[in-house]
Image (cartoon, rainbow, N blue to C red; front, top):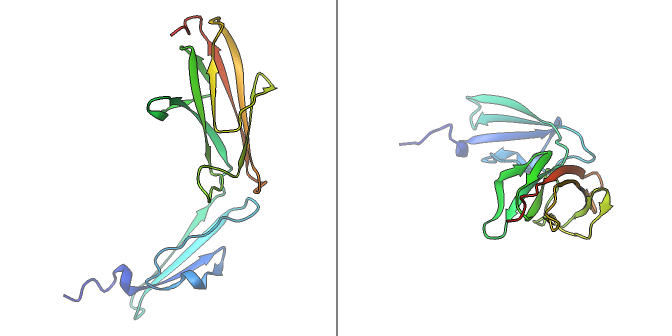
Length: 179
């Protein structure tokens, strides 16, 4: 009935980041550790040493966290159901309807305040700038003719200048884009 003597509440945790002890996150029952990544882009090594209160059992492990460069993925955004994360656009796609809205999703950018307010979006079509200041863009085939366009997006951190990514998408228009 004494419970598990080696349960999370009966252990002492010693955290290290890049070889340096993290005293504020280490100690009795402190089984989680959260940190902000390094600046500029570098890799991080986290070490955790765990021991029983009476030192009867001890263990240590390390994890290497490579810094991942930010990137962008494009998804179709349906007006009724929203972003369709199961419909990612690759490097090239065919537009089989008259209009499509594309949502740009940033990955591995810092985003402390939600919805990526610290990012600048610069869209272009066939090399020409487009007035669009958000993460979505709507494309239409008004001529209903066959053709191609190159959609490009560049994202850059406004205050975190080391964060940037660019993504291109070749759009093929079919004559059948009349629906």
